[in-house]
Length: 434
Image (cartoon, rainbow, N blue to C red; front, side, top):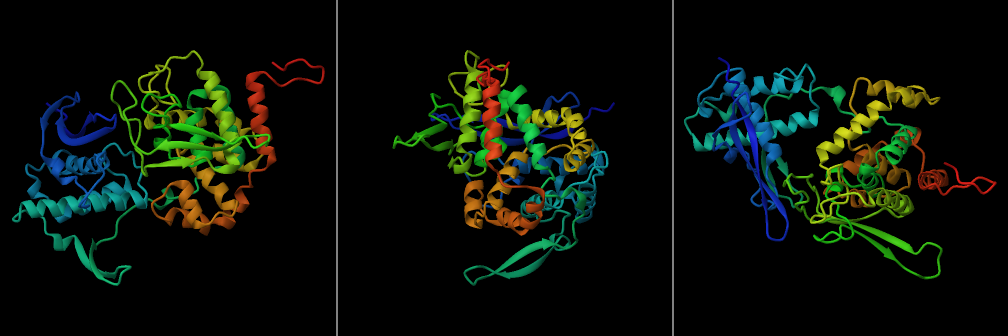
């Protein structure tokens, strides 16, 4: 009888007195019905190598990588009884299967270079811990790594352990710019404004303020009892538009749902301003969304900005599903376009899923085309390092061929859209357009 045992990650949510939500991850064994049959102490192997870590950090992503490897060596391939029996050959065979997409359930779909390297680093750290706890274990670290010397920024010499063998990965999966034409972007935005207003503010926060989708899910309303998550600054100095700045608070991860589910992580805690030229666009989206939310139920004790049909805060996972479904539903529209780039985009969507970060990507492209420096792009994106900014800048000529700067036409488009939705646009005879 196949009991279907497998390792899985058990996440325990904890709510602190100040409303912050933290999570602790454990590795458990479940049966085929997904019932927990045993808790393990393997969570000690998923700790990062840092001496200090942020309190809300749960290492759940690391635990997912470790669980996949444990399932491979315990239940799928080698049927091990003890973790100390893992060998270097098992590790290499797993990494090869992982990178090429040959694990059970992969369906032949490989993984990108960055994902494979991340997996290798986590598993290497785990195996080093196993060797430290069980000196007589079968694993021999000298078969896995070699020492590489490098000089740090302050002139010191540091020794790094790097894998002896190169990793296997699918090079076709690595395409940073996701090949989305600007017109396709506005087709999707148009669809969201007209028929999917419940996710409009997540989209707006990503496209006009550069937030990550998971961070945008953490935004709260102005009147949230947990503190305002969005703030509008007005200066009445005689100008036509007194709105000067909009601030989005993603400075801490709070519990925003009564079921204690995590809505998404915040990679860099901060109060992020909406990019200046996009303030009118963001405000228009906000007004449309708040009109949509009038008299609609939401969990007032949390005051999440973006909520689902049950009034609970949107999760990153659910937002990703919605965006992918919207893009899939729009494929016929893309294929009918008179723009060959949009048609090609529709063809690509028939084989590949759209990334939930497309709006943040578009935002970054606009920063590059507006001549922002590396440091400013890093600032507006909320990145810890300039690597991503440099990647975009290195492809600036390519971006200029694929995109164009935001012009007054875009502002006119959004103004028209707002008027159409509110029913305020009038014909020459003074009658409202339905």
